[in-house]
Length: 221
Image (cartoon, rainbow, N blue to C red; front, side, top):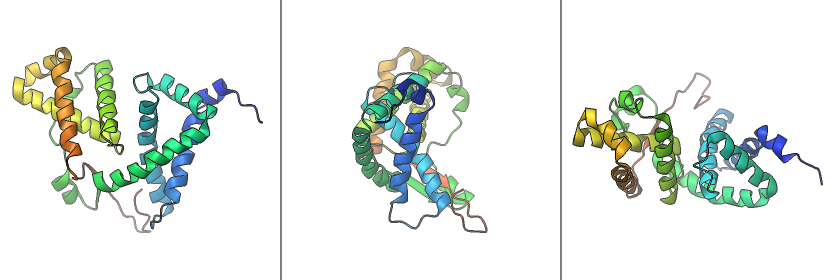
């Protein structure tokens, strides 16, 4: 058996390479009319969702990104067969959620009419301490996964956090919303759970992706 230096391989992002290969294998085997650029787009889109899913399954989601990636890589190297089984489990559900939660649009007007999470809350978000924001995002992702929402985790978690922040602004006013977010985590978590349950109880697309068709019909860039 070929010897692999686990430490060196994992610091060289071997784990990410193996996960991308697993995703690519499944995307390319879909019985759909996808050209090369569309397959690449879908594989890259799915890869991050898969990584979050596995980090959650192994209890690594709350670690810093570098440590989490390293520890996940070690698990891949130790038992890739078991990881491949988890990827199968995830992908079967992910593709269902992709078709349910993601809507493709072909012009600016369509995108604006269906987009969720509108409103300019970015200036308030920027004032949230980075550690707290990262912690909240990971808590949202974990709860989404528990509710079988395994697609578009980054986008949906940001939408939920902005929706919760918007509720806080409406309830407490702009000046006090940030204070409540920082000092009353119980209230914030309850609002997060309620938003996620609302999502789980609907089949509405939550993510709008604008598609640009170029003259050679390459599809999604």
